[in-house]
Image 1 (cartoon, rainbow, N blue to C red):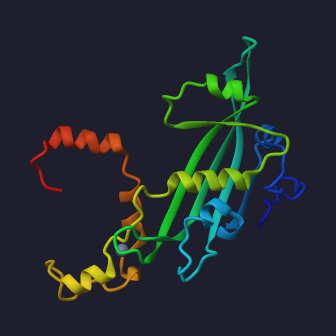
Image 2: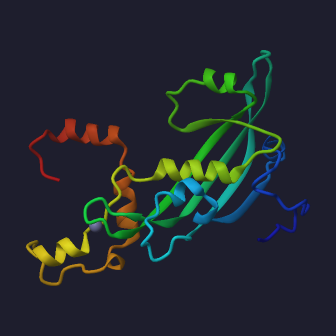
Length: 213
Ligand SMILES: [Zn+2]
């Protein structure tokens, strides 16, 4: 954890309990590591036979404000939080039931509001920005877990299941088939799992149902 020499060091941020409004107003930045063992709902997703049930995620958080029209009709600094989370966790493949390591890359911007009512008022059609209710005792680890749960693939599965691939070995590359998850680059797994369903619809419209994948 490094501090930029130009900025005052300040107190070490406790990601479990800090003033989110102040964090945004003073445009602070923080980074750290959380482990799956700190995230009970994520841990639920990790099969018991996983080689590592306590993988790590790195996170970076940055607070900022933007001048916006406030409820009282005047322009004021609207607090925002940007949060990025990267890492991997072992999930159970829904095709062959063996554990595999899923990459997670979440990056989200949150508009920080004061109350639940305010959050409910915010239009939901904005894909770019999510809304969170801020707190003077904000738990960022909770938000990190939320983001990871949202990033879970709908159907967790190997790109190529090792068992199936070996036993069937019928594909064009069956002879020198992929026999280990490690042979599948993580970058290739991740973008597919995050395909925007609307983008998929768009390409269907363009290409027509008969086109090949
Ligand atoms: Zn599998």
